[in-house]
Amino acid sequence: MARQRCTRWSPLVRFEGLAGEFSQHDFGEVEVEFVDGTRRRIHFFASRLKYSRYVCVSLVEDQAVESLVRTLAEHLASWGGVPLQCVFDRPRTVALRWGKNGEVTEWNPVFAYATLEMGIGVELCWPYRAQQKGSVENLVGFVKSSFFKVRRFHDEQDLRQQLGDWHREVNEERPSRATGVIPALRLAKERSRLRPLKVQPEELALRIPVYVGPTGTVLHDGHAYSMPPEAISMPATLFLYAERVRIVAGRHEAEHPRKFQAGEESSLAEHRAALVAAVSGKRGKRYLKRQQLLELGDPAIRYLTEIVHRRPRQWYEEVDRLHVILQNHGPELLRRAMEDGLQEHVFSASYVERALQLHGGAGFAAARSGQGRAVFSGAAGANP
Image 1 (tube, one colour):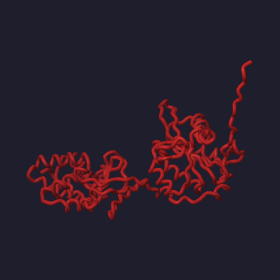
Image 2 (image 1 turned 180 degrees about the vertical axis):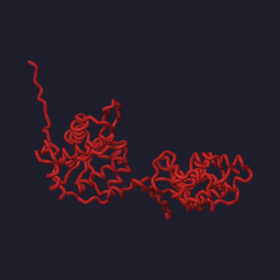
Image 3 (image 1 turned 45 degrees about the horizontal axis):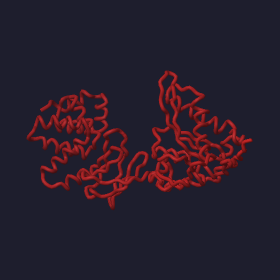
Image 4 (image 1 turned 135 degrees about the horizontal axis):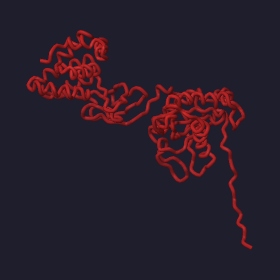
């Protein structure tokens, strides 16, 4: 008779938490088919307090580190505080390298700085610890099975509205299967154990090392942000907020509205003036002014191309006047005026100057949108 080999089984240890001890966080994705037959891959970020089972789920654009930390901050703020440990799986948005024993040897620096700013403790699901890893993964499975797979959506707006309804159901109306208690009732008890969030979501900044290039700009995510010419060639730190950026290079500092559209740039008037002043010689100054105008985009490129070819020996006079408009009125108004000039086939600084003098910013905006276009066009005169 064959000898029977004894198999040793490790005891199952439930990964449970006390009030205010753990929260779980993870990304998920699902293919959604809308009522009209169109399909879309939806990314979401899910968070759950382990004790109360209170859940927060947000739709996100991607699974990048910025989406993680900003959504995490919003979820923690909605709970009213931070537990002792926030438990994650092992995405590269959190940890870049770890040893065989599961100890992290290299954290994602953007994630690490953000967690320090918020004042949260981080714990990762170590490999081969099924109780931990399974618990986090079950959060994503719970969201898929109880929301995405049992509902139909007309479009993304309908999906978002139903997600709000689902939050009320699972948090405020239905008892949790694990505890038999409605999560909102347990959350009221758990909140007393949560610690304050050090930074509110709108003030959370990601810290990114950058460099001030030879043109006096810092590049981030394809967008250029201006800096003083004295900061050229200096290492810098870009603090990335949800709606703005702040750049610090030594004693030099600048703040810009954050840009999102492809090709958008932000250049401050004082930086443009300082760069022109720092360039020696009339020729160098003229070409720098022209370059600053060209950076307004395609309308400026086409408009200046017409001016240069129509007045090849006097274009710099037009550039000087247009640059003054740029400094006094900003890039948006000048860009709009150039777009109208292209449509009206009027290519001169006089066209822009007279329009701004007659209508001002608000009047120009109305003319640009189609109200009073005949008055605006007639004010500029004929093309010289």
